[in-house]
Image (cartoon, rainbow, N blue to C red):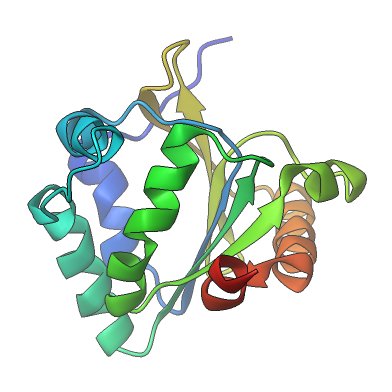
Length: 174
């Protein structure tokens, strides 16, 4: 069965049009985001990457959070974290400055809690965007699901993940 995936501006529009809340569960140890390739390589070399690659996202999120909307994420973290997850932890303060609230949950705890093993965004507790990636971790698009039972299940997982996750500052201090 072929699934229609939302990509490009159509996907970005989800972040322009949500009304109250956007939540992401991030489950992967690495993402193949082309815009991050160079900054990630600089990070691995011990250099301070510029943040211009993230600017379009930060501007969009700043615009939304200034309107009183909430953007939240729970990132599953391996112990020890992969190089990519260390890169994400390094860049998190940029997201926080834009108004996101990002928390961390050990992968082993997520397994105990029976959280899904895939990424998703949940918008306004009524629209689910299940993320699809290729074998190299490159984002292929989002499958939009509005079936109430499926959305409620993902809202439950959101609430569970949020409850057990550690806020960024406490995470980096531990």
